[in-house]
Amino acid sequence: MIFHWNHLDWNFTDPKLKQKFEAKQAWKHAMPGGVKIDTLGNYYVSVPRWAEGIPATMNRIVVKEGVPLLEPFPSWDWNEAGNVKVLQSVLGYEIDELNRMWLLDQGKIAYAPSPEGSQKLVVWDLTTKKLLDSIDIPNMIAPYRTSFLNDLVVDNKNGYVYITDSGNGWPDHQVAGGIIVYNMKTKQLRRVLDRHYSTQDVPGFRFAIDLLPVFREKPMRIGSDGIALSADRRTLYYCPITGRNLYAVDTALLRDFSVPLEDIGKAVKAIGSKSTTTDGMHADNKGNVFYTMLEGKGVGMYSPSTNVFRSIVSDDRMLWVDGVAFDQQGSIIFNSNRLHQMFESGQPDMDWSYPYNLIIWKAYVGLDVKSYLYAN
Image (cartoon, rainbow, N blue to C red; front, side):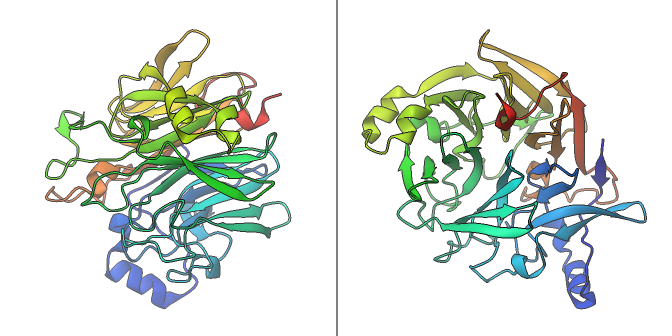
């Protein structure tokens, strides 16, 4: 256990903003989405704006007098809600082998339609501390009403980025999941597997954590979510949250924008059931895929060489394990955020005095195990 909170708090520089945050109890919907570490050992955490009042959506963790606080990254100005030119709501992001951060901006706040120009892929150089690029993701690629840009993987060797759109941006509407491919060289975007069975929620799917149904009054429906790129960059793995299957597709088909969409759909492989619902995924440099276990309360691993799924680590406090990443020193880092309790309607309020509501974990998985990004 590296960091833990009863609720998230920020290193505020504006007393008025701090007062507003506390008065409106905005921390009740401040959920750590994904955690990652850079080459200098700095920890970052995204806090998506799924409700009003989140001070900053992208953050670096700082420790003040022994207390972990969030500090807006790269600045307060870059986290200004309502300014579509800067970060609006970040859930998924990646730190690549060149120490560049790829930020996937969902654009939408509190599930309102994404304003034009708000959905984007922002590239930030952590070494020079400079903005490298900001790529607009337009309505024709990710519909502003239904889109829910979730997570991404980066392939610098071939020059592509792969993004999951969970398609649940309109909660009262049918899911419209898909995969988005970005060509770094041409700066073109293409949407594939739109509403394909593998990117959709499983019809009628229900699941429980600790025998308690998740979102009892309005069952969760989320399409393609977790995403992982194989070490050799040849296979893209992905999965919905409301379903247990792991799917895969050949990246050669995704990189060639002339391949018919129908052919890509036919090439999808159902790897099999993980025996658990999954949120975040990440592949290592050995060819394995690590996935979070919502029902199993922990992290599991799929080995393509043996086609075996197995549990790696589990703990009763690992309630809704979200993102998985690597510290490049043999360990995985991940967080548990109680999403199913924090956003459950009609449920008793969480015990906000409990010090382990939100946790960032670290688990050793093997010598020389690193992210897929560091594969030879």
